[in-house]
Image (cartoon, rainbow over all chains, first blue to last red; front, side, top):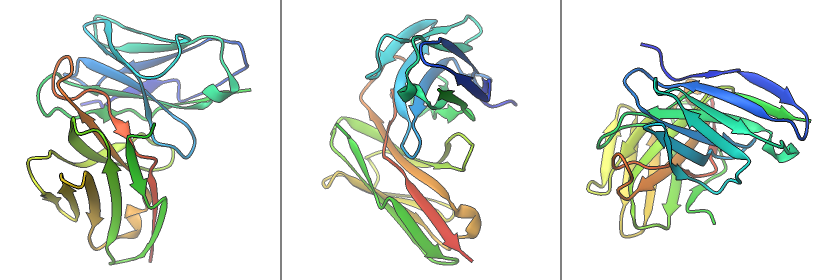
Length: 113
Length: 117
Protein backbone atom coordinates (compact mmCIF):
# COMPACT_ATOMS: atom_id res chain seq x y z
CA UNK A 1 0.00 0.00 0.00
CA UNK A 2 1.67 3.18 -1.22
CA UNK A 3 1.70 6.09 1.14
CA UNK A 4 1.46 9.72 0.14
CA UNK A 5 3.64 10.45 -2.86
CA UNK A 6 4.84 13.81 -4.13
CA UNK A 7 6.61 15.01 -7.23
CA UNK A 8 9.07 16.34 -8.01
CA UNK A 9 11.41 15.79 -5.06
CA UNK A 10 13.45 18.91 -5.77
CA UNK A 11 12.89 21.98 -7.90
CA UNK A 12 14.86 25.13 -8.65
CA UNK A 13 13.08 28.21 -10.02
CA UNK A 14 13.85 31.89 -10.40
CA UNK A 15 11.92 34.83 -9.00
CA UNK A 16 8.73 35.61 -10.89
CA UNK A 17 8.31 32.12 -12.30
CA UNK A 18 5.41 29.80 -11.65
CA UNK A 19 5.59 26.27 -10.19
CA UNK A 20 3.26 23.28 -9.95
CA UNK A 21 3.73 20.58 -7.34
CA UNK A 22 1.85 17.29 -7.35
CA UNK A 23 0.54 14.94 -4.69
CA UNK A 24 -1.09 11.51 -4.71
CA UNK A 25 -2.86 10.67 -1.46
CA UNK A 26 -2.62 7.43 0.46
CA UNK A 27 -4.97 4.74 -0.80
CA UNK A 28 -8.44 5.21 0.66
CA UNK A 29 -7.88 8.89 1.50
CA UNK A 30 -9.96 11.60 -0.08
CA UNK A 31 -8.84 14.77 1.70
CA UNK A 32 -5.57 16.49 0.86
CA UNK A 33 -3.87 19.32 2.72
CA UNK A 34 -0.78 21.29 1.73
CA UNK A 35 1.77 22.70 4.13
CA UNK A 36 4.83 24.92 3.72
CA UNK A 37 7.83 24.17 5.93
CA UNK A 38 10.56 26.80 5.97
CA UNK A 39 14.01 25.72 7.10
CA UNK A 40 14.10 25.18 10.86
CA UNK A 41 10.38 25.80 11.28
CA UNK A 42 7.26 23.73 11.73
CA UNK A 43 4.93 23.14 8.80
CA UNK A 44 2.37 25.88 8.12
CA UNK A 45 -1.06 25.06 6.71
CA UNK A 46 -1.73 26.41 3.22
CA UNK A 47 -5.09 24.87 2.26
CA UNK A 48 -7.16 21.72 2.28
CA UNK A 49 -9.11 20.09 -0.56
CA UNK A 50 -12.04 17.76 -0.37
CA UNK A 51 -14.54 16.83 -3.11
CA UNK A 52 -12.44 18.84 -5.56
CA UNK A 53 -12.99 22.10 -3.71
CA UNK A 54 -10.86 24.22 -1.39
CA UNK A 55 -12.40 23.79 2.04
CA UNK A 56 -10.05 25.61 4.39
CA UNK A 57 -7.25 28.08 3.80
CA UNK A 58 -4.40 29.29 5.95
CA UNK A 59 -2.77 32.71 5.89
CA UNK A 60 -1.26 32.50 2.41
CA UNK A 61 -1.71 34.96 -0.48
CA UNK A 62 -3.71 34.26 -3.61
CA UNK A 63 -0.47 33.45 -5.43
CA UNK A 64 -0.94 30.04 -3.85
CA UNK A 65 -3.69 28.04 -5.50
CA UNK A 66 -4.58 24.43 -5.82
CA UNK A 67 -6.67 21.83 -7.46
CA UNK A 68 -8.00 18.40 -6.63
CA UNK A 69 -8.82 15.84 -9.29
CA UNK A 70 -11.58 13.21 -9.30
CA UNK A 71 -9.02 10.55 -8.29
CA UNK A 72 -8.26 12.69 -5.17
CA UNK A 73 -4.77 13.65 -6.32
CA UNK A 74 -3.91 17.30 -5.95
CA UNK A 75 -1.74 20.08 -7.30
CA UNK A 76 -0.29 23.13 -5.61
CA UNK A 77 0.44 26.10 -7.86
CA UNK A 78 2.51 29.09 -6.84
CA UNK A 79 2.65 32.13 -9.14
CA UNK A 80 5.10 35.03 -9.19
CA UNK A 81 7.62 33.20 -7.04
CA UNK A 82 9.46 35.12 -4.35
CA UNK A 83 12.74 34.23 -2.66
CA UNK A 84 10.75 33.65 0.52
CA UNK A 85 8.78 30.87 -1.14
CA UNK A 86 11.85 28.64 -0.85
CA UNK A 87 10.75 25.83 1.45
CA UNK A 88 9.77 22.20 1.74
CA UNK A 89 6.20 21.77 0.52
CA UNK A 90 4.39 18.91 2.21
CA UNK A 91 1.23 17.17 1.18
CA UNK A 92 -0.84 15.33 3.77
CA UNK A 93 -3.83 13.11 3.20
CA UNK A 94 -6.54 11.66 5.39
CA UNK A 95 -9.86 9.93 5.15
CA UNK A 96 -12.98 11.68 6.29
CA UNK A 97 -14.30 10.71 9.64
CA UNK A 98 -13.69 11.04 13.30
CA UNK A 99 -10.20 10.50 14.66
CA UNK A 100 -8.62 10.12 11.28
CA UNK A 101 -4.92 10.82 11.08
CA UNK A 102 -3.10 12.94 8.55
CA UNK A 103 -0.25 11.18 6.76
CA UNK A 104 2.50 13.28 5.23
CA UNK A 105 4.40 12.74 2.03
CA UNK A 106 8.17 13.24 1.73
CA UNK A 107 7.75 16.75 0.40
CA UNK A 108 9.04 18.78 -2.52
CA UNK A 109 12.06 20.97 -1.83
CA UNK A 110 11.63 24.25 -3.75
CA UNK A 111 14.51 26.67 -4.11
CA UNK A 112 13.80 30.10 -5.59
CA UNK A 113 16.86 32.00 -6.86
CA UNK B 1 0.40 34.76 16.22
CA UNK B 2 1.82 31.45 17.32
CA UNK B 3 -0.89 29.26 18.77
CA UNK B 4 1.34 26.35 19.81
CA UNK B 5 4.56 27.07 21.68
CA UNK B 6 7.15 24.29 21.89
CA UNK B 7 10.23 23.97 24.06
CA UNK B 8 13.09 23.36 24.20
CA UNK B 9 14.38 24.23 20.75
CA UNK B 10 17.08 21.55 21.06
CA UNK B 11 17.76 18.71 23.47
CA UNK B 12 20.73 16.42 24.07
CA UNK B 13 20.10 13.21 25.99
CA UNK B 14 22.30 10.25 26.81
CA UNK B 15 21.32 6.82 25.52
CA UNK B 16 18.87 5.23 27.92
CA UNK B 17 17.74 8.57 29.34
CA UNK B 18 14.35 10.23 29.23
CA UNK B 19 13.65 12.93 26.65
CA UNK B 20 10.93 15.44 27.55
CA UNK B 21 9.48 17.99 25.14
CA UNK B 22 6.81 20.45 26.17
CA UNK B 23 4.09 22.31 24.32
CA UNK B 24 1.54 24.92 25.31
CA UNK B 25 -1.50 26.00 23.35
CA UNK B 26 -3.84 28.96 23.46
CA UNK B 27 -7.01 27.97 21.63
CA UNK B 28 -9.40 26.08 23.89
CA UNK B 29 -11.24 24.79 20.80
CA UNK B 30 -8.32 22.47 20.04
CA UNK B 31 -9.34 18.86 20.58
CA UNK B 32 -6.62 16.81 18.94
CA UNK B 33 -2.94 16.90 19.86
CA UNK B 34 -0.51 14.81 17.79
CA UNK B 35 3.25 14.53 17.94
CA UNK B 36 5.23 14.09 14.75
CA UNK B 37 8.79 12.87 14.20
CA UNK B 38 10.77 14.16 11.25
CA UNK B 39 14.12 12.93 9.97
CA UNK B 40 16.22 15.10 7.63
CA UNK B 41 14.89 15.03 4.08
CA UNK B 42 11.69 13.26 5.09
CA UNK B 43 8.12 14.28 5.78
CA UNK B 44 6.75 14.28 9.34
CA UNK B 45 5.54 10.90 10.61
CA UNK B 46 2.88 10.56 13.29
CA UNK B 47 4.23 9.19 16.57
CA UNK B 48 1.32 9.39 18.97
CA UNK B 49 -1.75 11.57 19.52
CA UNK B 50 -4.13 12.40 22.35
CA UNK B 51 -7.54 13.99 22.87
CA UNK B 52 -8.43 16.14 25.91
CA UNK B 53 -10.66 13.51 27.50
CA UNK B 54 -7.61 11.61 28.80
CA UNK B 55 -4.60 12.86 30.75
CA UNK B 56 -2.06 10.37 29.50
CA UNK B 57 -1.50 8.04 26.57
CA UNK B 58 1.33 5.56 26.22
CA UNK B 59 2.53 3.71 23.14
CA UNK B 60 5.71 1.75 23.64
CA UNK B 61 8.47 4.10 24.77
CA UNK B 62 6.43 7.20 23.91
CA UNK B 63 4.01 8.83 26.36
CA UNK B 64 1.91 11.99 26.03
CA UNK B 65 0.93 13.78 29.22
CA UNK B 66 -1.93 16.24 28.88
CA UNK B 67 -2.97 19.01 31.29
CA UNK B 68 -6.20 20.57 30.05
CA UNK B 69 -6.46 23.24 32.74
CA UNK B 70 -2.92 24.44 32.07
CA UNK B 71 -3.34 24.05 28.31
CA UNK B 72 -0.10 22.11 28.14
CA UNK B 73 0.98 18.73 26.84
CA UNK B 74 4.30 16.97 26.70
CA UNK B 75 6.05 14.07 25.02
CA UNK B 76 8.18 11.70 27.06
CA UNK B 77 10.54 9.32 25.29
CA UNK B 78 11.70 6.61 27.68
CA UNK B 79 14.98 4.73 27.20
CA UNK B 80 16.01 7.15 24.45
CA UNK B 81 18.06 5.60 21.65
CA UNK B 82 20.41 7.13 19.05
CA UNK B 83 17.83 6.18 16.41
CA UNK B 84 15.40 8.57 18.12
CA UNK B 85 17.61 11.49 17.04
CA UNK B 86 15.28 13.61 14.93
CA UNK B 87 13.17 16.76 15.06
CA UNK B 88 9.92 16.44 16.98
CA UNK B 89 6.88 18.61 16.39
CA UNK B 90 3.82 18.99 18.53
CA UNK B 91 0.64 20.06 16.80
CA UNK B 92 -2.97 20.84 17.51
CA UNK B 93 -6.23 21.02 15.64
CA UNK B 94 -9.75 21.43 16.71
CA UNK B 95 -13.35 22.25 16.34
CA UNK B 96 -15.68 20.52 13.98
CA UNK B 97 -14.35 21.13 10.52
CA UNK B 98 -15.89 20.18 7.25
CA UNK B 99 -15.69 16.48 6.73
CA UNK B 100 -14.78 15.49 10.25
CA UNK B 101 -13.15 16.46 13.50
CA UNK B 102 -9.74 17.30 12.13
CA UNK B 103 -9.01 20.43 10.26
CA UNK B 104 -5.68 21.92 9.62
CA UNK B 105 -2.84 21.19 12.01
CA UNK B 106 -1.11 24.04 13.86
CA UNK B 107 2.49 23.04 14.51
CA UNK B 108 5.03 24.10 17.08
CA UNK B 109 8.46 25.19 15.88
CA UNK B 110 10.06 21.85 16.62
CA UNK B 111 12.64 20.35 18.97
CA UNK B 112 15.84 18.87 17.61
CA UNK B 113 16.67 15.83 19.73
CA UNK B 114 20.14 14.31 19.77
CA UNK B 115 20.65 11.08 21.67
CA UNK B 116 24.31 10.44 22.47
CA UNK B 117 25.54 6.82 22.56
